[in-house]
Length: 356
Ligand code: 1CP
Image (cartoon, rainbow, N blue to C red; front, side, top):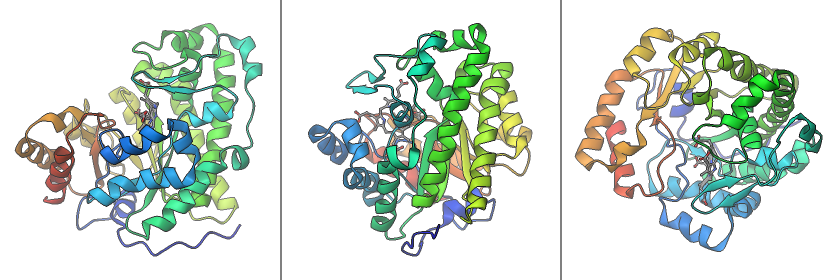
């Protein structure tokens, strides 16, 4: 397939950093940078429900561009949600204000697996591809566009748990009670994720992030068996498929939030992802020591740092860079930005990073 022509890229800092090349300035983007802390986002959300924004390329694109217009960020990330995959697989997902995503009819036991459909990603999630293509044009090459997905375990846990949870016990029980069926479900999800990421690259995504947001529920054995196995397959098969279709590879970021240091080390040293995203609990100096010299690290300022004074935010941002070092590094928060974060704090964070 011929690739779509897009405006020439003017800021490739994040792509260079992701490939381990030296950069003249440290790139920064912010997880959930298009979101509720922006009044212009709230304005759109007051008129449209969450999934309508995701499903309408003009709206998804507008929201994606909002933080780029306001801040000196070095990447954009397409506005969507990781739960569009469970939706495409036939489950109902509602976004309940103040609660987050709710799946009213979750997968309770293995007999429920027949309710899941293997979607035609190019058709059923075409709206995401269309939003990516439109956004690439509207960005006019200002910064690269990141595509993303949830990883298999994180999506499986929402599908079983039926929403967010501080323990994910229903989902974790499956891993012990129904190990074979857990693998069956993880494989079904993984197959969809692979098609989905390939489609995003064809549509114009220049970097991919895989969110394993629920790695914090897994010990080393469970991570290896139920998360790493599929993270590896996703990376390998996406690259293989792109190669087969003569489409240039894009760098890939894995963000296993809350994974143990051992699990992070195994993932980093496997070299399956160019970039490893770290949450704020990981010590950058220890990460550099343990994870080898090849891996690019991304992160990891505590999102709550953004409630400190602007001076404190700038100092802590500079200190973070000092700990990670200036090469093989992409600055970010250690998780998504909080909805009530002061806008001036975001400006201070970017100023701090760019001043180093
Ligand atoms: O009403 C609203 O506006 C809901 C708030 C919101 C937003 C702005 C949700 C609900 N999702 C999003 C967008 C979103 N979700 C993006 C947009 C791009 C950007 O970063 O700017 C991305 C990348 C996501 C990914 C996502 N959704 C993750 C992975 C990242 C993470 O936070 O770990 C997860 C776990 C979700 C599920 C989800 N969607 C929304 C909420 C509140 C949650 C978390 C619920 C929970 O488990 O507690």
